Length: 230
Image (cartoon, rainbow, N blue to C red; front, side):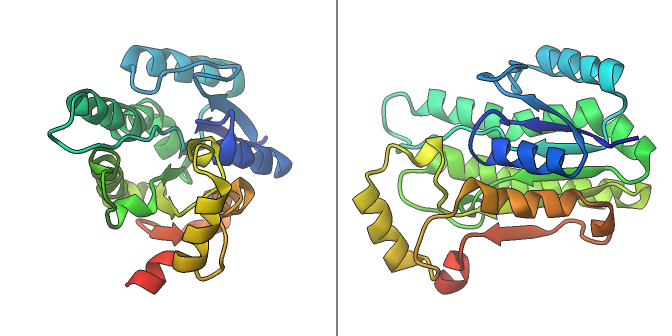
């Protein structure tokens, strides 16, 4: 019997690449995404509980949870709309993963080899200008991942977090290509943005049964950017 996975944010970008790579390995994957076939607002507890219950009823207990859904948010604290940006960022980027874990944790523990992979950002390891709401949420997701690793490690569940750097996704599509190239040459040792498939590769590796001793890891997938700036 194939393992069952839920990937949030799985309709595009690194989430979609993760879905594709998991399916190529024989995993039965359902994507939760506001823009996909299973529209679920991960910040809405009732929607999350109902959607997870449906997956469980139709496909079986959940073995793998990948929290990839996210929204960008920025601004300065004294700017108009900052509070709304802050609340939305925390709701989707931090509370959403927590609600997903709560809905799936019973299955993950029962499997004896449950896998949780949270997708944060290099913003969860540092900070840039005008990214307060997003940065705070991603730092929180790093801390939440570590707590999960400590709380559930003895049950066979592993919880790990990857921190992607600059990646060519819908979230970065608004940045002019010339600006991307300039940033990459100055800041990323490999000299370019990542593709979604390159990020997904690390996500999927952490879901493998053989990754049973990788727990509580916070892994930059950034072409060496954080190493350069350390």
